[in-house]
Image 1 (cartoon, rainbow, N blue to C red):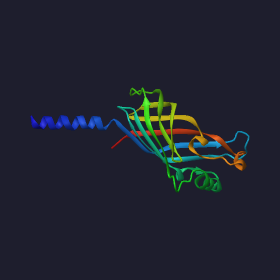
Image 2: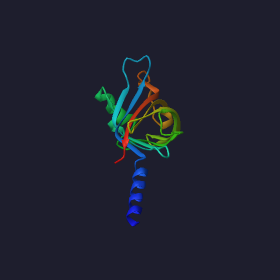
Image 3: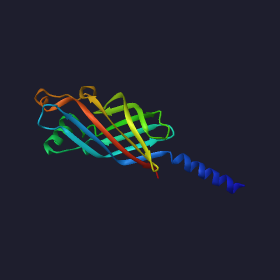
Image 4: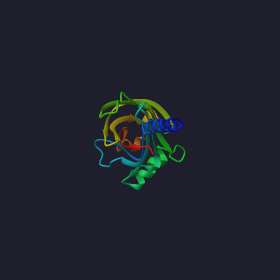
Amino acid sequence: MKKIGIVVLLLTSMVGFSQKMMTRSGEIKFDATVGSSVDEVKATSNTVSCIFDKATGDIAVQAMVKSFKFKSPLMEEHFNENYMESDKLPKTTFKGKVVGFEGKSGSCDVEGDLTIHGVTQKVKTKMTVTVAAGKVSIAGNFTVKLKDYNIDVPALAKKTLAETAKLSVNLDLDPKP
């Protein structure tokens, strides 16, 4: 009888544990290009970490600011030193919920706290959730105003750097080991 109890306990804990999904290779693309500008202000980070709990919809995402790579090393330097102050404020995070996730593919509201440049703001957006072969993918786009995160766009940069940035998120999540 004791052995059956131990087996049931192990199976129950494995089922509960398998609800957590994660990645360390998610992608966030940043685009703050002014529409008429020849110079693109675009960067990509491919080392985004995320943990998603399928049972509760809780999600936490983190990206190191210095992981964003630009085409131009000078632009990357300006991004890190002048705008994001990445030595002082090294990461950006999101902590929230995938609202209404029921274990199947579809469009869901994602809402929570987005912290950029040390400033936290409530955000809400639609994301596409895809469930297939034991994996979950979460993808979508949203826009942030740089001034809402205390990121100033100097007058000289307004011809190339927009006052809003489009963020594109793509997270391919596997069961947490």
